[in-house]
Length: 137
Image (cartoon, rainbow, N blue to C red; front, top):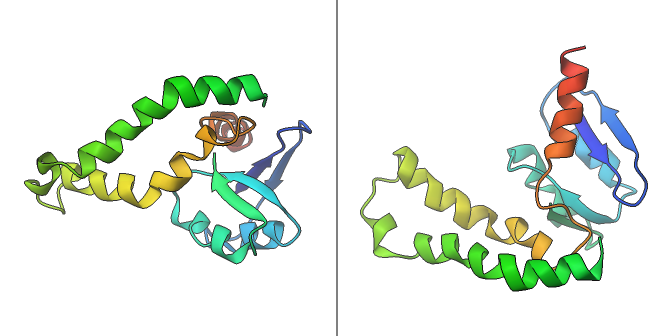
């Protein structure tokens, strides 16, 4: 199940597909333009490059953006600095601690989208919670 939620229009769309393949989001994306807030599931990975510049991955007001840039931006640089430090080079890449730097590195740009667009939520918890409502009946 794929869930889509509007920011300016409070609308939830649930799209049931027979697999986790990204053909569901691809069909939805065909007419969509804007910021896509998604988790790091591999099904979302190819959406932005296929969006002809209309879709930007992620995850309100100018004031929110200003606060994010002044308060969150310095903190968000921390993981990037950590993955480039000596601490990560001494860990085996197949171990959980070794996988974390790679995941952070691979998703650094989408994870930072909320710092440049005040309308983008910092997380996708609202969509995750709405999907749970459908799943538990």
